[in-house]
Length: 378
Image (cartoon, rainbow, N blue to C red; front, side, top):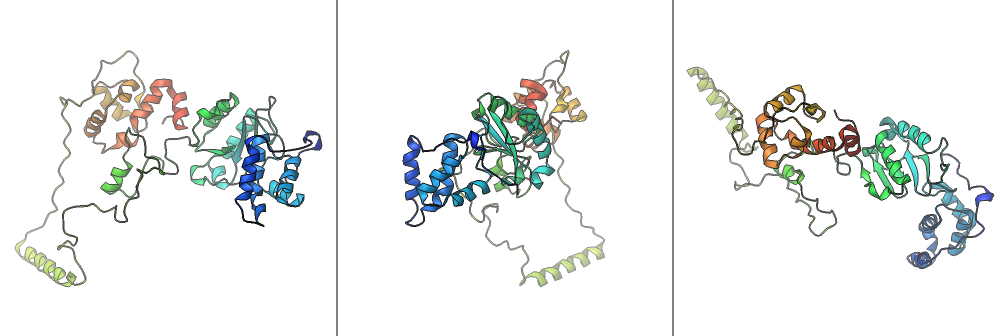
């Protein structure tokens, strides 16, 4: 771990005191702890001091120590141990902490660091000329599944690419960091698998994870529910015990019966065949849910930029009169189901989210696609 020291004396203020509502907050925080245990408030008080002044000064460390009856060296030990505390002035609009631990490194954090050196300052913990931005490399910040990631003040921004971080830095430098939603910067929910669920594919789970246009129910709302332990089972009107299932008590008799049937079939020359699967029937071209086609325009969009569309599928879409991203972006659920059935895709159009991909491409081409999904199309 690198040595962390206080800033030079020439930048240190002479005194520190909590101001405004922070005074009452600090007193209330200390009272949360039982008598003799008030020193446990040292981390929250240091963090509030940093939020007030932008960094943890020597005067703030001494003031917090006095409030809690601690030796100065004890509070200094806490402030210098945790990288969440900034011991010298950092960017006023954004201090970018880039995780450089193994999972993030394997997923491209070194390129993110190169961008910070180029966009902000060649040296870490050094603000840019305007004093609005700074950066540093830190150890694991606990979002390994969503690597690579950065932390800006209290929020994390995950699943990053270089263009995406460049865009985030732009927004913070313009004073519009609130426009960026924290968390994954690609089309995934928290740490869910990229591309959607790939296991636990029972009808119940598929229904629970089906993507709809409705807003998700907040996890802490009264409407949120936890599925029962047997939620994965398909509920039917059948009895709990299927009489055709083998059990230790019936296996021996069932095995003998099977052997007798096989012997009888061998004597008679009868060969049992597995029932043939019914062939999938394409929906009619005259179906009301078929998306409306257009005549081929002078310049068609490259539909192959939509993930899931190759040359063969593009040719079929052209036969149906589908030539532009705008057409795909406007498909209703019924129209998506029709095209899905016509292509025999078994739900792939919704899983790959063709509509959202097409919306981004229609709105701003490759640049908008990168902003939305954090990667280039295809």
